[in-house]
Image (cartoon, rainbow, N blue to C red):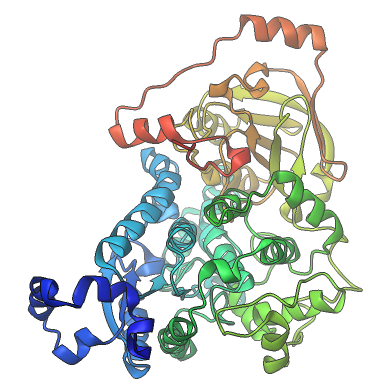
Length: 565
């Protein structure tokens, strides 16, 4: 076999030989020349959409990728992927479809790649579930691949010298109800908070996952932070197209890059950045496809020894564009490496190790207001904490870096709701008071079904001025933009008989985030009595796609992955 056929061995099974004349005929029907067919075929998975603001510009990214592939001697063939905008889907039935979309994206990418025998793949996602879904497919397929995202949105404006983002608008809804924001101010924020294309401007789920893709090593340096509208994003896309051909020539595959050491690196940077709690769902699902099992305990172990170096929105005043100007993810990784907190010998899609990448870029912090140093962290431990107790024996997740000091350790009084809608009404009607805990049941992966985000509820609490006095507990999940004492992923979920379903109005719940405790202050005898009398609600979705999801999905503590069948 000559060198050419060594690098297009997969597509050769589909396009070479006498019996493959019909196949070549169909390739010619695409407008491909004989020369193009003979080159390695590179699938370009493009999640462009006129529905998702973060994906509005991905056609430009795809064209740049294809240019890079052609420059490096390959033939790019583009195909689409779906994506859900979590912001648009929020607080109505649409949010039930967001998390399930992750697995459908993974499945559809795998179907297309295996059916058409691509030699290599370039994945182009940007927003929340599209990034982990594509990464899951990348691990399953294990052919030379690279991910290039669309990049973050720039922050908008909420008035003179006041930046804003999507979360500002969600919080302003509560602010209006509390007479802290005028209707005119809300309207102005609606129009100006999200100024254009890109994934929402703060360290929310999309940007968290794009940064972690860079950290894991399956995306080029700059992937997580270069703004969507900058020319540097287009140049990075061209480099991604060229680099996937180099990966193909060297036969560097995802499972050569994604190892137990790169898992530890991803979680370490997650904690340093203060990423979305959704990473605790997505990373186990991604790494599970790479045959690497990670538990909630690993997140907590790494969190306890990793300092939190960044407070980006919603935790602080900085945005992704500020992180880029401060040195980006390489600067964060360089600082962590100084403390021996990273495995710098891990291979990346550059074909070089983490250490070599950092040295080549002379990675260092350019603005210590945005990225703090190891000797001056926001906290000595990481941005996410895993809580356990009699409510959450399998664990619960909280974005510790976004919790007010007043709520880190507190006793709160339970207000129990079976579903988000009733809880939201109570919040906006002023029924929730200081020292309350809004407890929302039956929003887990199976019980929802779909594990909805509760951003509208948490943002309303913050906007009404209750963020330092009210907690929200749920077996559902939260947006990466959530601010406050929002404790989610409580497992087992209520639909599976989890003890969160035993909480009653007026119960006292003890929250102790520094010591990782979440306890219902009810006697064991009383809990046993309640359990004996408890029959979990079993909601049957009217939608077949959600019924199938509910039948396959596992606990949030397992990344809400599908069970083995």
